[in-house]
Amino acid sequence: MPQIQTPAASPILLQLIIILVALTPLSYCDVGTAVQYGPPYTPTACYGSDPTQFPSSNLFGAAGEGIWDNGAACGRQYLVRCISAAVAGACVPNQIIQVRIVDRATITTSMKANATIVLSTTAFSSIANASPGYVNIEFQQWAPSLSINILIRQHAISAFWKLSA
Image 1: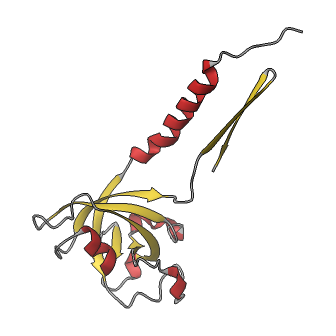
Image 2: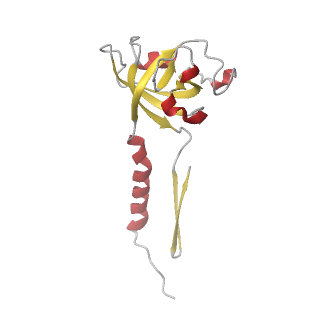
Image 3: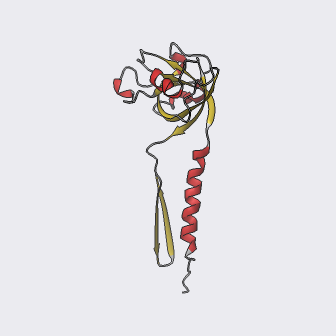
């Protein structure tokens, strides 16, 4: 039986294609608005009065209806960046924060209508210098535990590629 040989460049080319495809979604962001709210932060729609729901950085927020997704937003993390505001110079340049969703914006008492994300005071002040009321943001869902490991093993005539997340 004749053996089938794979060209030496195939595994390298496949690795590059897999890496490019895996990194492509990282360039997509959505645009929305953010406002801030202050304490008390509990109880929340996601975790009630559990104090462990809040990250130690205090970078958390409440999901607006556009990202609430019937409660599936609870625990999601987003990368958020201020891109503009009504007050000139309000955005902290090149500042990107990672926030965890712990609440639903429509039940947050100081929620402003139609905000994409309502940020904790700490989170909001991390991306905006002043208190402009609201800021326009660029945001992207982030999965910090996601890592791509590429294992390539060639044995005889077969090549095995495995992606693990």
